[in-house]
Image 1 (cartoon, rainbow, N blue to C red):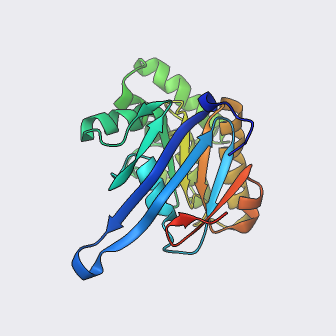
Image 2 (image 1 turned 45 degrees about the horizontal axis):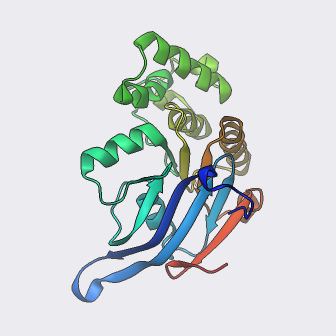
Image 3 (image 1 turned 180 degrees about the vertical axis):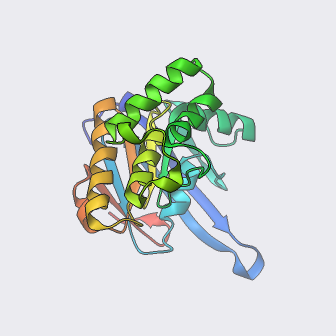
Length: 232
């Protein structure tokens, strides 16, 4: 994190997160007291070997899982420990996800896929949602393919739709788990550039898990993880 940043800039913060997975003899202490903060308008890469806890941390920060101990705050509001309904509402309002696999709904168009998070949040009219979705698709270079089914798009195009979908509700936080891991070099660079440019323009905090050292080097900050803790 930036040492000069004000506390209010850290839209996402956690302290002393612990997480165990498995049971009995197979129980593993995956996260061992992780503390972290993500600043608005900055991109942080989390790097480390497979199995070190990167994705587990991202799922906790995204409120998709609960820590065994520790706390998570979004915009100063404590999120850990809440019930499923509260965490679901917080995800819809504050968090956008981009995963290695785009997870688009294949029977829907690119436009409809981008509109889905907005429909769930239900803050905009149908017409407003469509205008915003079209604008986001134009931002990622797919304005002319808004009405194509997901299955009619290339892998790189599908991932760009996933970036647009993640930005649909203007989230304060973008979490990306190997978002370019399934793409070739050209599309990896394209998706990374889009994700980081749009996030910086919108003042969003981005937390990116990646094995790609070239992409990590282009982030504002790199945090190295090993055996469930940050080692830098």
